[in-house]
Image (cartoon, rainbow, N blue to C red; front, side, top):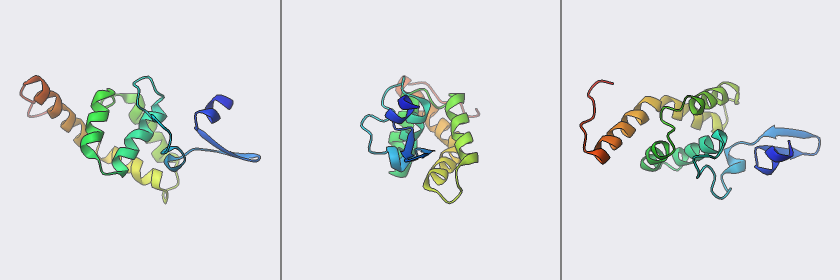
Length: 124
């Protein structure tokens, strides 16, 4: 618990504790910067990019961190979507990311094709 609290994963207030939401963690330096960072750090970074309406940065981030097809990343997003309160910002951001998953993957594949000079597949 101390390690998780030190990483900002939990917010402790007296005898109660709760899972930290994006608003609790958005100011953390280097949140999700490294490929070796925890999936929750990487998910929070992706949510922050979405919130800031920085789609190109999100596509680059997902591509650079190999998250477009990372099943654990998307399972974590789905789990949070299912348990978070529906009226919260984290739920809305997670819902948006999940809803755009296929479109984001397509953009990443186009980006990869542009970088390699290959033609993107028409039907994937």
